[in-house]
Image 1 (tube, rainbow, N blue to C red):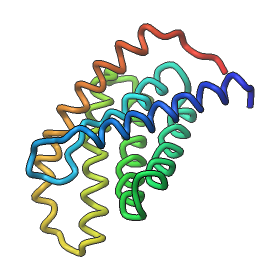
Image 2: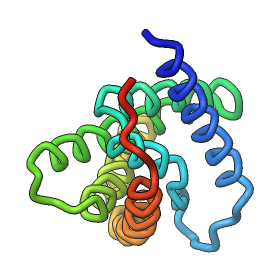
Image 3: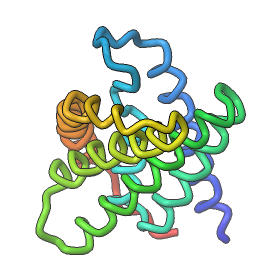
Length: 164
């Protein structure tokens, strides 16, 4: 692995961790647990566009583990991993199809992230009643996904494609 690539990936993982911490400081005034801004997904969206899908996956997974070990616990790791991996898979497949804009990809990723977390919560708490939270989480996932997609698209447009 080239040193330039290691440096870029390290910086993006660090940025994702900082955004995750900043996001934890922002109160979300909705009565449904789990609603977040999705700031860390901004780094993944940018990585998809200026790096490779493999790099985006690496950043996503490393960030999830580091944030869980630094600021969270085993349950936050389970929720984040389920949401992050499902979100990544959906975004990867939509990008490969070349039929969706980055805003559409980000939006689908936001909804998929919330769906993955609801599935884990239903399993952990052993109740299917949590599915009733999904419509609200779906709306928040769409809203956050659109904002993150717009920001990520604009930032990536201004950055050079990185060949590492």
